[in-house]
Length: 236
Length: 336
Ligand SMILES: Nc1ncnc2c1ncn2[C@@H]1O[C@H](COP(=O)(O)OP(=O)(O)OP(=O)(O)O)[C@@H](O)[C@H]1O
Ligand SMILES: [Mg+2]
Image (cartoon, helix red, strand yellow):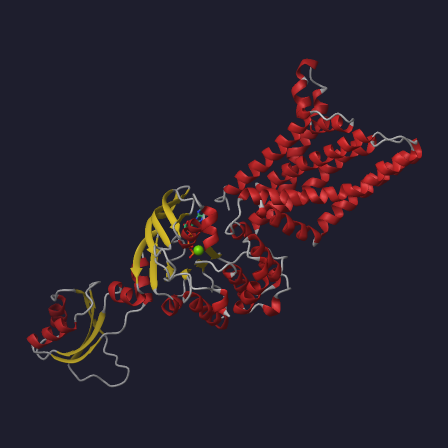
């Protein structure tokens, strides 16, 4: 566990020294802020519904930008060999890097807490769905980042890692929509696989263990596979 | 300073071997990089690890760090199995990898702090150890520059400082002086020699003079197999087979007859007439210069050579034995 923290700290330091994390946070807050104020002022609506609907789409695009470098660069620069000559496991490496990226997205989410606070001043706000929604956002972010990290573990090219991350997460993002094309009896499985649907439940304030299990299984499954892929060293 | 950084780890209790390699084999697909390598390294030995390109040196070191898994066989470092007890092995090892890959955007200081933290070096001692490593490796002036901007020699020294930070019992150095200018090589060689006084070291290199200057033992591999193992001087005598230069007046026997007679001696591998080119003085008329190579492991043929000359009634004007070098050994054992 010690190794996980040390890796996470190093990755955070390296995020703070490069533009990608700042760009990610800025883009996220810019888009979200624009949408939120537009909604409040034009429609006069006082819920976080649109904000919560927007986040999965933004994470889909921003998470791969944060993860593409994390493992691909260790392969490309051959620094993985140096890192793994230290007393640290592949699992600690993967977990630490995932954690660092998750912290960046959590930092991006932090200022948005101003929205529910503002809404609660304007009228009655139900904090249940808000809390559940933010929990859902963190789980969703963790899942997208784990998918991206897995793609980054497969290659030594950041570009391929980016493409791979999108190739992994896009299908999971659209599979629910595609389900509508199928006969009703066959919609169950694709709907279950859909990343967004589980979040919709949480954003409505319904904390169902199936949704939590879905996100956690996918996240840790991807991280585990990334660990296995780091153990394949002979591909160079 | 180096005494404070590196304690003597080898006179410690448990005097077992520091590295034990048993029938270690490694395949990469259809390429067999190592074939049943077996050797041991005792405490305090400084092993020069030699072999032509592609012989399997880096592969061996990567198996010892646990970075690669052997196809078969076993390796123990400080008594720990490199596969089963990998983390413990990595606590005992300091490693400088070939070409010292380091994250280019981090500074040497950041690298040192990261490694110190990961290796759980006591926070109270951390600053001093980092300071000592910086001083020993001469990094003071570049501590806060990006590692990617440093010259190759400086990067190698950063790699070495990182490997020394936790006072490891065993150091694995993969071509630490490759690509350095002569001054840097000399400095780094001094450093390695100093390290060798305190630690068990495996030094992989192509620079044979480096081995002669720093190593107490030499292991040569070729095509994934050990072809020589021993003290540098003993190896030179043993494997290069001693060679002798003779200057003989044969009287009524001509050169061919002299060569034939010498060939008949036991322990002689090869006899050849050498051109008469003295470095100065002209040899007397009628003298023949002959070079004789002994079979490996026949260390001394001088008595036989003298007696042969006496029995044939030759006049032995010169008998000279040029010292064999590691280079001779290397060429002989690794040439195709
Ligand atoms: N990851 C790999 N995949 C496939 N083959 C490999 C791999 N690593 C090494 N080899 C092969 O194994 C053999 C030994 O290589 P190794 O790098 O250990 O040699 P070396 O003695 O270190 O050579 P050099 O002096 O050039 O550094 C070579 O034939 C090499 O091509
Ligand atoms: Mg090598």
